[in-house]
Structure formats: structure tokens, C-alpha cells
Amino acid sequence: MKSLKEIIADAESGHKAIGHFNISNIEGLWGVFGAARELGVPVIIGVSEGERKFIGVRQSVALIRSLREEFDYPVYLNADHTYSVEGVREAALAGFDSIIFDGAKMPFAENIAKTKECVDFVHSVNPEILVEGEVGFIGTSSKIWEEIPEGASITSEMLTTPEQAREFVEKTRVNLFAPAVGNIHGMFKKMAGGERNAAAEEKLDIGRIKAIREAAGAPLVLHGGSGIADADFVSAIQAGIGIVHISTELRKAYHDALEKSLQDDPDELAPYRTMAPAVEAIKQAALGRLRLFSGM
Ligand SMILES: [Zn+2]
Image (cartoon, rainbow, N blue to C red):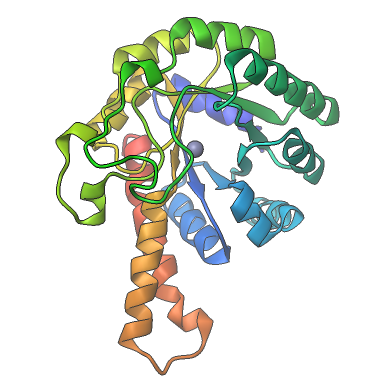
């Protein structure tokens, strides 16, 4: 079985990206894993602090490990946005494949110091675990419009510069770097079926991605993938994005399918029946993204 580091290097050299999908439960896991297996592509399962509290930290590791072993399949587990050094330690000791320390809201120097502390600890536990750092504003919520008021837009002061990327990676020795390049967590209103708001659309700065990839010297991770146009994804991957995070789109697919399933058959009480359409909806959403990321 290839390591996650090797899988990412393979993807980059083939101008492809690995899909990273967040899950909250086993329905999400089977949906995403089913999609990856259907296409035969590697996949990263992400659990945020809230998601891993719900599933269980050690249980998350056991679930992904069981799939990797039973199916001899390249499926990896990432501790998404971890805001404390303690949370990073817990994930490293539990056996995650990669961990994001998110110090993006801290002043730059403090972000560097805390991230470096995390890198040193994690690599003392296991040098194979990848650590990701983040610089710049990409928001923290996947709730539509919670952080982005109507009419707001992403300004260039919120974006990461190549100089910041170089300094951050050099000083922290992170394995992966998450820049702010016009991406934002959650989806804009048009995705929720509302009015299109041109001023607030996600538009990736492709030139900046290329410059940051060169300056950082580490693979780049694109967060907040939900709501980004297909053509922008393709250009971003060509420019140097190695991993793309998708969460909100899958949550919406799950939510809508479950709602419909409960309404369609209000007398059905078996969760494995009411949940089946939600698993399928997640699978279909993940399939579309995985095809795009792997150039299929
Ligand atoms: Zn993210």
C-alpha cells in the first residue's frame, strides 16, 4: 500500500488531485468510499473536530483502517481543521494519516510557532503522518451565509501571498499547505437555490496558486471546494493543487435525500432503509467531483 505522501506525489505528477470528503457517519463513509471504488481512485476521508467527536476519534481510525485492510484500497484519514495543539496530539496518537493544524486566525508569527510545535510533536510520534498548515482567510463555517453577508466578496487582502507561503513552510516544515486563493468554506447562495449573487461568487486566483506552489515547495490543498465552478477546478489542479476538500455539497445531498426519503415513506422505521437514498446521494455527489479531479 502506498503512503499518502506517495499518493499525493503521483497525483501531482499526473496533474490530478485527490478528493477529500468530510463525513459525519457511516452513511457518508460508504457513499464516498463507494464512489472512489467505482472509479478506482484514491480518496481521503476528512473529519472535522465536530465530526470526529460525533463518530469518535479512535472509531474514525478503526473504520478507515478496516476499509483499507478489507479492500486493500488507498483510503486515508485526515483530521480536518484542528484548532488546538491538544487536538493535534490526540489525532496523532490515535493513528490519523494526516492532520491539519488551523492557526489561520492567529497572527502570522503565532501561527508559525504553534504549527511548528504540532509538526515536531506529530513527527516524533510517526514521521509518516502528514501535517498541514494554513495561512489566509477561508472562513470556518459551512453554514450558507453565516460568515459571508449578502453582497460581500473576497478581497485580495484576505489572500495568501507566495512570500508568506515560502516563509511559513520553511519555518514550520509542514508537509502540506492550505492557501487562501479565492476559495471559501461553504457555498454561496446560488448553490442553495437562491438568487445568483455575482459579487460573492468564488473565483480562484490561478496565477497565485502557481506562484504559491513554487514558493511553498509543498503540495497545496484547496479548501472550500463546494461551489467552485468545474473549469476553475481544472485550472487550479493544473496550477498546482494536489488535494481538494469537498464537504458542504455532500451535506446538502445527504440532507435533501434523507428529507425526501422520510417524506416518501413516513411509515418506514428501519434506518438502513430510510438512509439508503442518502448514501446513494452522497455517492453520486462524490462521483462527480472525483471524475473531475482525476480528469475522467
Ligand atoms: Zn477546510
